[in-house]
Image 1 (cartoon, rainbow, N blue to C red):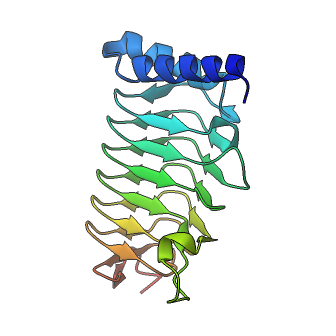
Image 2 (cartoon, rainbow, N blue to C red):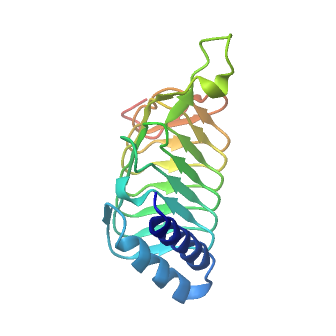
Length: 202
């Protein structure tokens, strides 16, 4: 990277840090305009609260009526095949991490509610070898798919290679390690079936 590009990159970093913490409706409007021009796709009526950090815009798509509370983070990467796709009418509470780095893919459907402190991680560190540190073994890319009309409770962790079926509910504090069937309520560590939401599914 030449000196001019380095200076431009530093300027963008400083500007992003500045607008990230701008308060009130003016801050939300400025953040919307900034991300609208840089994301792969960006719908209308986007509300991004103070302290939120969205990185690597080119592989992130966000639908309309998106609302995210303070201090949430959305990571992809512009260098690889990572991607994050978020549908319409999605609400994220505070301190949520949606991380597709390491070649992962995350797709969140429409009408999804996500409680505070939830973590999505679509890739895992490799650990097969014991002769070298795990941090030097790289990562194994994976995926997370969240279907429409899903509610994820606070402090849940969604691990790689799982699909959360339509209409499912993930209990607070659950660690999801395998697929969740549609209209199921799951909870625990690891998450297990608690009940079904419809008589037909029982």
